[in-house]
Image (cartoon, rainbow, N blue to C red; front, side, top):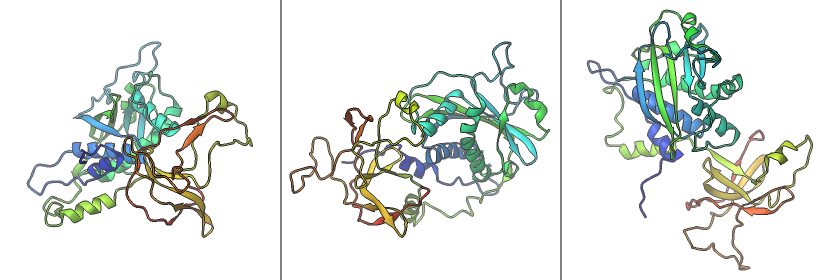
Length: 359
């Protein structure tokens, strides 16, 4: 059955990682919008498992006295940024700019790092804290690094830029900046398959010139070898594979009662029931945990039985299902079945895959 591909991590990676070419000499220069869109979506999805889509992008010159265009702080209401997180962007030469991350974007970054997934519904907004900056900084740093080398313009002035410190009063930012020209770029975002909106605004020195090869010099990807170029892009796409031995549902009360050295009994867990999954919990293969050459390894088992609607699992010699469904339960409580994710039907030959001890 043919179906339109979802905007999954794999599809988004292929679409968003394509290079941004620039025009040949004498043609109009390509602006940074395409590069910004592609990089923001790729960094959030590939590196942080946060499938964000850029719904709108805008660029404008900053005001000299209020570069970020945020209101001044009101008495008794804290900083003028409200619930948004405002931080300096710093390089070796000092403060070169600033960033504004909306409260919803900060909340989603915290959710994916603590819960493993971002909720589709907005959360109650609150003032940003230094802890929020610590959790959001890796996202901002990765984006700055990708923008420095990924835009068609020369952004060498952003080299080494990272998140700095919180700015309680954004109107004082002007006193920290030098007189070089700067641009103010805002990307409005939405979480894929939801209506949860967010935004990020960057204040950085204006890019100069054209740094990337021109269209006349760049190799054609739509010519005679289009199939080969597409295959290279597909096979080169980065994907995250997670080995799962067991999942357990625990109440917050039980988690707070954990003590150092405590032994936790995992109901239904076994070394021969390991699952290889995507970051979205789609089953790739099953196997068992062992060792190879002195390091932890996974021996891939036969491919999982196909599951399509009401079609039952294949039966073994004893009349039992060939594969146990994953279970999860509370410690000392009742075991609760967890729905099994969609099964990938590609054949996977049995082989040992070495995994580092630290992984």
